[in-house]
Amino acid sequence: MSAVGVMRLEPSIDAPSPRAAAGGATVITPYSSSRHVHKVSDISIEADVLAENRKLGHENHHRLKSHGIRSLDVMGAIGSGKTRLIQEMAVRMMAKGMKVAVLAGDVTGQDDFDRFKKAGVAAVNVNTGKECHLDSHLVDHALDKLDLDDLDFLFVENVGNLVCPADFPLGTDQRMVVISVTEGDDMVRKQPLIFVESDIAVLNKIDLLPFMDIDASLLERDYARVKKGAKLYRTSAKTGEGLDELFRALNVQA
Image (cartoon, rainbow, N blue to C red; front, side, top):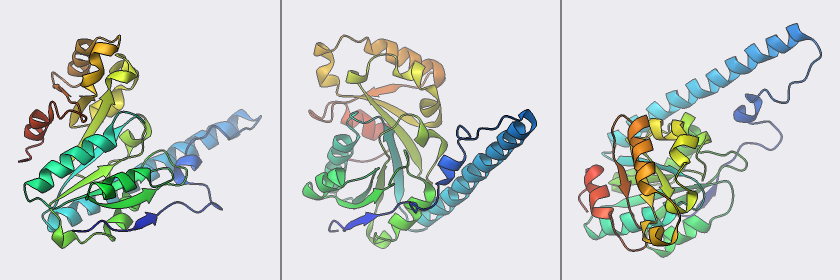
């Protein structure tokens, strides 16, 4: 399966995005009653946006399963090593005969897409334009660019962010959040929602642990607390350490 071309998918510049419209922070009025109306409207709009995203996500899930494709939404902050981790996992899976592709999500550019292509991994570049997360609508259009009959596993690399993606499931079988040792040992406490909403969590770049002043066990305890005893998997995408255990956790033979 050859790498497919770059696709730019983004909201129209002339119209505010649903996410922007739902914020409410730009609504300014001196009248308290009017302000309450705006708040109710904003809550209603945001609820509608989230509900529609979940509906489209269910459709994406059904579409992928109808082709026998397993899928994983990979979330994490910029610099957590999502791209390298996905790349190393995909290459190992392909070496075992699996047909793998990636949706490379980012606000702009095609750096990650180029990395996947260079590694021989089929990919579609998905630019959000200004949004801080992928949504089910963008994923639906991106799937049109793949030959779903010639695919076993799909990685969806979300936009680098530990906040926005949590509220927008994309229809994948599982969701994985990646953090790195370079981000400090308070990430779970600061951003608990994305860990709660994920099925699996990874502490990446453990090859750098000897050089970082962090307590990795504290991250593991915090994660176990918010996720009811779940394990935080340690990996190094650079050295390959921990990948075997991660594959087992995902029930992937690679």
